Image 1 (tube, rainbow, N blue to C red):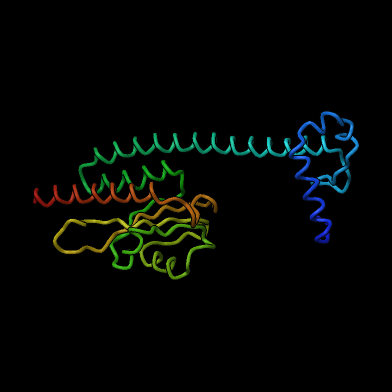
Image 2: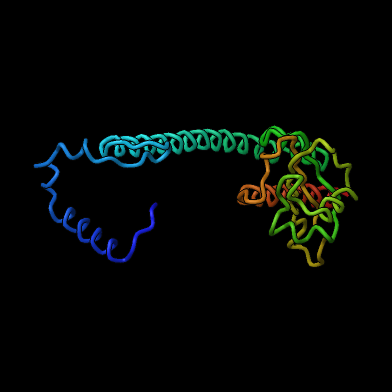
Length: 224
C-alpha cells in the first residue's frame, strides 16, 4: 500500500463515503468496472475491479472448502475415536483382575489412539502434577527433566516422536494419600500428541483406568 499525505487521505475518504451513499453509480457507469485497474493481490500485475472481486471470492471459497474438509475429517476421526473408546470401556468393565485391567489399558488404548506404545508406569510422587495437567507434546517440546523422570520407569524409545503421560488418581478416595501411577502413550508420529492438544479425553481415560484398578484391588483385597 502506497503512502499518502493527510490531505489526499481526506479526499479519498470523501470519495469512498460518496460511493457508499450512491449505490446506483456503478449501474450508470458499468464500463468503469472494467476500466478501473487494481493491483493483483498475489501477482505483480494490474487487473480490473471485477477480476479482483472474482479473485477474492475464489480465495474465500478455497478457504471455506479447506475448513469444510477439515471439519469433515476431524468429525469422522472423532466418531471413530468415540466408537473405539466405547469398545475399550466395555473391555475395561469386563476385566476382573489387575492383569486383565492392565492388558485392557495397554493393548486397548494402543488400538484406540493408534500409537506405538501404551504403558502403565509404577506410582511415583513426582507424577502428581500430571493428573490435572497431562504431559503432552512432541519429543522436541517436552522438557528434558520430564523425559528423564519417565526414563526412571521405562525405556524411552528414540523412535518415539511424541508422547503423553497422564497421572492416574489411584485410590483418591482413600483415607491415606497414594502416589499416582502414569499412563504413557507414545507415537512415532511427531504430530500425534501436541502441547496444545485438548486434555478432556485424556483425563476421562485416566479416571476410568484408575477406577478400574481401584475396583480390582478392592475385589482382590476382599478375597484375601
